[in-house]
Length: 262
Ligand code: CA
Image 1 (tube, protein in one colour):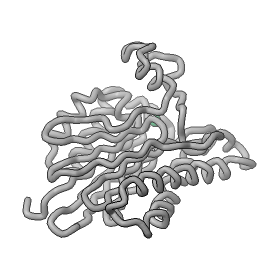
Image 2 (cartoon, rainbow, N blue to C red):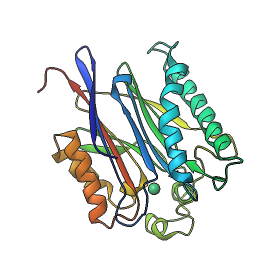
Image 3 (cartoon, rainbow, N blue to C red):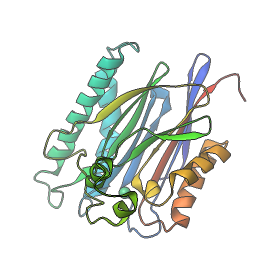
Image 4 (tube, rainbow, N blue to C red):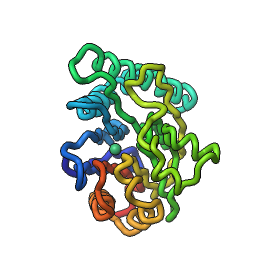
């Protein structure tokens, strides 16, 4: 999937976004997918998993169905209703997970398929961030990169409880096992938060093909030195591939900027 760039204008500010997905250096197919819909204030990245074509199918269900589901769920809510919007997004991802699950049942070779989801939904000057799995959202503000999401993975849980060190996490046998994802048997409750945006903020949504290969410090460095969003996406993908490209890598970078600026 190539690079795309698009823009949403809201009075004095605009949301500009670009994305890039790459197969990496090792894998035979790309199971990542993204939806870049800044005109709807919606940005989504998904990382599929499962045998046969399951991973590709699962992530494609996510990026194809989720935009309409979010739109229908939020249409009657005002931008001020932050808590209600968070709950609505959580409910939407519960439904989405169920749909992925239904698609997997009874179709040959698709049992157990699933996908991560990380989405940013921009309403007013708030970015609502929701996720399932180990695809991540970061906020890059005033030169600092902040991780907004907690990986829904077995290793992520062990790290947060201090049972293993970051070094041990890299080689842990369960490092690819997700504790939450779209398509899981149990109800998939996403974490949802509202992040107030400031002019100049950048949001990065990405799959673990980036974060498994490139340290946060290097990601911050690239975001700090790439004025152009497509260049930023390409540089992030290049960094993952230069580090070995062990996985598919997908990055989506959005910027909240003043229309007075260049
Ligand atoms: Ca991956």
